Amino acid sequence: MNLPDLKEAKKRTNKEVKHIYLNQEYDKNIFKNKKYFIRTYGCQMNVHDSEEIRARLESLGLTKTENLEDADLVLLNTCAIRENAHDKLYGFLGRCKHAKEIKKDLIIAICGCMAQEENVVNEIKTKHKYVDIVFGTHNIHELQDLLIKRHNKQEINVYSCEGDVYENVEYKRDSNIKAWVNIQYGCDKFCTYCIVPYTRGKQRSRLSKEIIKEVECLVKNGYKEVTLLGQNVNAYGKDLENELSFAELLQSVANTGIERLRFVTSHPWDFTDEMIDVIAKNDNIMNYIHLPLQSGSDRILKLMGRRYTKKEYLELFNKIKEKINNVSITTDIIVGFPNETEEDFNDTLDVVNTCKYDSAFTFIYSPREGTPAAKMEDKIDLKTKEERLHKLNELINKYSLENNKKYVNKTVKVLIEGVSEKDDKKAFGYTETMKLVNVTGGIPYINSIVDVKITDAKSFSLDGEISKWKIL
Ligand code: SAM
Ligand code: SF4
Image 1 (cartoon, helix red, strand yellow):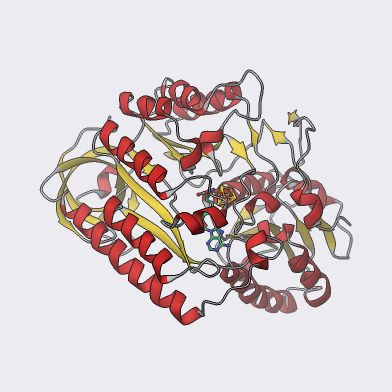
Image 2 (cartoon, rainbow, N blue to C red):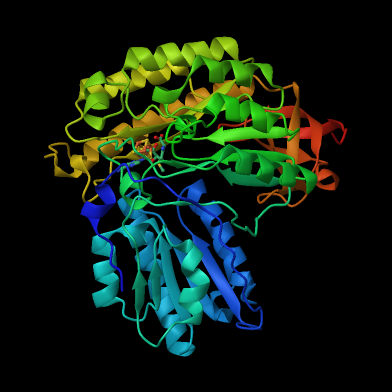
């Protein structure tokens, strides 16, 4: 049994990160005719980890089911970023417990960021003994062995370490046109509110030659869009000697000929002019940037450890807007950081009024055990925080709608992905600038990039119709 240890998770040493190539082969008869159910919480990193987990489960012969009741194995890939992620997991665990009462040999496994938290694992050990396996973010590659060698007792195997990089990972991707590609793991920024550097380990970049090989392979297999993934993609390579910078990596990946290239998330502190130039000059690097603000108040930004001021953020924002044609910019904002005053909050609103973001993810600050901010005394009550969130969201939505309205009567390229959830006569897809479009007449063009004439705009989506189509 290996239990998570917060003190270990916090450590950063000079130990060299290993780039490991595993040679794992399994017998598909081991779990023949068995089914797995997987539920993923949280960010894109988790979504992509679940694609790795699926490939690992299928290497043992398991097949996917969407019904919990049909499953022989339930796997919950968890998120720890805010408290509500905990609530969601415990809520769903109740259903899993019930399913196991009916099907006694159901295997229940928990992994992901919550599995890296001491308090969570203690609770699973004492109150949720029906959970069979817990593993963390550093040992996804051990999943098959954990399942094969499992005894009839709770197996907890979580490592709190800086971590290594596994290079030849296989994925069972959810889409056959859009792919996530990890370029980096972990984070060393240690923003004072954030649990990620503890749950994901130190910042470790993959080798550029392996990233490029992976994208070349995706292009060959007909993928149209790749999103480079990391907590701080633009700090890529800084932890390796003789490696490309993020701007150079972007250029090299763009050179593979992938039709659409995106990246997420970039930290304002690591955003270079070179990066902006590469994005501006390559048509296949999408003119969409997610640029987290977190707060518009210099006082709060300092307490958060964000390493930039309001003025520096705005300078960067303006530079991006000037140099990248028709760029759309979205952001993340936290309200109610400990002792955020009305004046601090107004600074945030001021930045929103200046930047007029295309959209934003907004959150009420949630204390995470073990982080510096969680130790700060907080005099602001929840009602005030909720009111601020409401006010912020109204402003964000106003600008989203204003920005979206500029698209009406224009023709834009949309990668059509599937049938619209709201109306099965329409298809949905995304513009280059990452706007969701519901497309009349789009269903025959699923998996293609087509010209769509925008007919209407809402705060969160656009409506459009096929104007002329051309599969690129
Ligand atoms: N690495 C990215 C960055 O620095 O912008 C973001 C990673 S995090 C998965 C996504 C967002 O969650 C953050 O940008 C932040 O706004 C929000 N977040 C992180 N910790 C939080 C906390 N303790 N309470 C509320 N929101 C939080
Ligand atoms: Fe968390 Fe900050 Fe790292 Fe983003 S940069 S993952 S917010 S510590």
